[in-house]
Image (tube, rainbow, N blue to C red; front, top):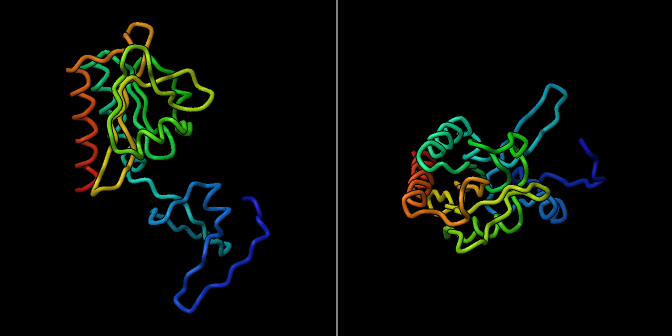
Length: 179
């Protein structure tokens, strides 16, 4: 744990303000759910809550299914990091932060399909790129995305059938979050 030197008082309603510098650094946005933990020494720990991250086993199983259906390696992410990967990809991608370009697509709530030879970098420092990105949106909030990845055997362009499979996966995960 890293000390910041910042001290805040609890107000009469039991609230504590997280300083703007910390929110900006950790990409904590207004309305973002936070998980609260305590430990035996009396520390209170706040952690960004990821509903998609809670479903990582289901996301991994669905990613494996997409690989079987589409032939494309597949990744699933929440708004912060990659939570599931399947296919001919390195497991080192797991838990890596999403790239700014991918984050922009996810936050737009609009799907991305590769045209010609353009793709989206998954994470800074990793060579993996997505040729199809379908945001997972639940109750109007962006929760993550399902992605088909560019590979040596797969062209940069995604067939309409494969795109529909990725779209269905994103819709399925969205419904699971609403349940």
